[in-house]
Image 1 (cartoon, rainbow, N blue to C red):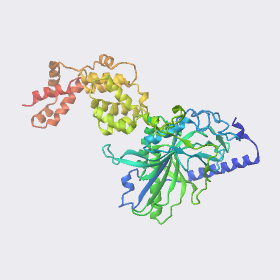
Image 2: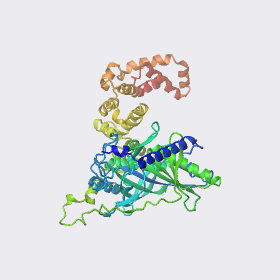
Image 3: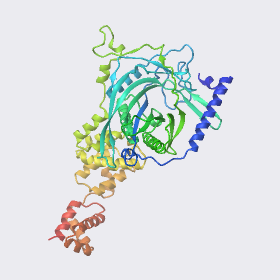
Image 4: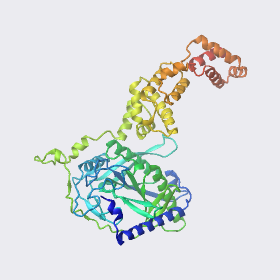
Length: 549
């Protein structure tokens, strides 16, 4: 259906392609002609150090989250990632004359739920507007959005931000949410440098977005990245958005400016379409550094839109914003006001299933990440930094709780194995929790055997490494095959300890002279002799009895 949009002849279409090609070539030259200046620090403390950098930085965010829905915001077209180009496009998405929008109930409910989770006030009446601008991937020449009266306003997001190199150096921050509004996405321009042409894919056109506008309450890249990560977790917990940044389901525009303390905010620049929290932090910190260096040398900051080149680690200019663009906002004539209800305002003669009830949506809110962390700390007695790792790592919390249910081992002991050993191994192999070959039941069995003193801690590490090979053997089978069971016969251990003592005369003299640290070397030699099968507590007791008066 949409193929003629790409191949329709005529002088106007040819001119459009030529203009797009020239634009793409211009941007490409800019990207490759830039070279990185000094690398910006990712430390907020450094960015605000009045001694070396007498500027205060201000960061605000505009976040576009793709709504988790089977169809688009105003049409019944399917939402499907990586579908063939122009294969999920309705007549309305392509802006054929005479087509009208029909609002998607699921998208409205998702926006209401997100607004409630972000502590916003839900407007019982909100309006849709047309935002006019021309670009090839916006076939109607305007975007339907909510500029005048959005669906949710005046909320806040609380998040924790790491200020040092250690997890225990964290502070709680709060960023105000100005509004949450519904709007439709645009299509996508595909630049083909080989064929020297630009094609348009309208699959994304009309997909429902929630634009979440954060006030300029942040001061550096790491703060902004932490806020976005927390928002991402909230959206995923709600199910209102998959929020997968690598698939473009969460895109961030950052507004950055610097000023002297006590003075009005400086001229801001906007860095567009950042699709990674890590790149967001780098882009903001680079932009802060760039602006302060320009001002320190007497220059002027341009009010412009920039892009982040992740390969070079720099922002590059896209277009200036000195002349404010007139979007010619106007009320959307084809959509009536969006009316929501709560228990008090619901008319008696209205079927509750035919309207959107704010109170019913509030009752369905799941446990949010901040509440989950508090529950994990209280329920299992783990450290706050461990609760952050469990919640922030996709699937790790479920894995940990599954292990705790399958064993009687102290959760504070389990958490070390889950975070240090399991997660450490998976990250080394570039695997996710869901790809782990070590199941919760296998880890629970291993830790139970360790707790019952059937094996030593060093032997348990060996068993874990074998489990990571994915050969399908249980911990008990591995212990039996490799003879890793703990040696508990005291007489056997005394003979082994005596042989070690006889072969380490200098160390024995050092211990007898009062240097007890050398005892650890003898314990290690016993463990080496027994291949980690000796009980280290019992070995230490035997050595002390033999060497100390």
